[in-house]
Every structure is written in C-alpha cells, then in structure tokens.
Length: 111
Image 1 (cartoon, rainbow, N blue to C red):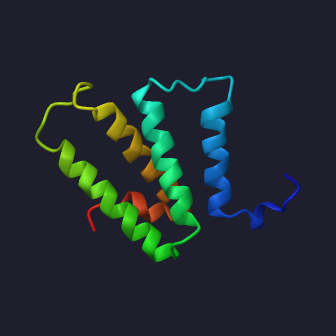
Image 2: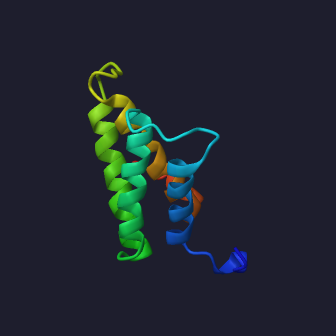
Image 3: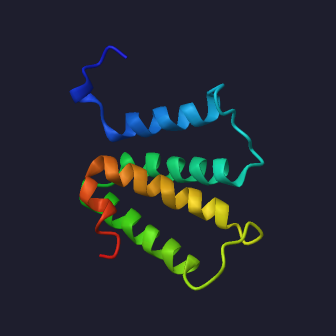
C-alpha cells in the first residue's frame, strides 16, 4: 500500500475488489448467494484478462459480454429461478470495471 496511486494498475484494482468480496466482514461472502457468485466469477475472469489483453481488446470483449447479457434479459421478466440475479451481478461488475478504465464505456454499451 506504499505504491504511489499513479502506479496502480487494473489488475491490482480487480485483485483488491475480489479480495474485499471474499474476505470483508462488512458484507460477508456467501457462496450460496447468486449475486456474490456472479461478482466473483466476473472479477476472476476480468483479472485473468487484465493481464493478457490490451486495453482495446479488454474493452471490446467485455462490451460484447454486456451486450450478450442485455440480449439475454430482453423481453423476458426478471426471475431468480432463471439465474437473473447472477447474470445481473456479472453485468454490473463488468460495467463498474469498464467505467474505471474509461467512463465513456458506460455510454457506449450499444457499440
């Protein structure tokens, strides 16, 4: 934590968010909670990709994933039985990380 803030990278930020999700005492991790599982899965995937993809590749991949999730949710009622809370959590996590990279990403989700 003695690293200058300007030297933090996306992988470190994702690692910290994942660590908080799994270890914090404020909102304890619940392996049976679909929202927690969705966020964990999204963060783990993004962490791997943050170390391998370029910024453009990373953004394109996750904007496409968000578009797929939006398609899945289109024209159907929201339902826990269909795992919608899990997928909504994945979507929200993708959006929040993409917003850190570049805030315009939250407005360009259709591209």
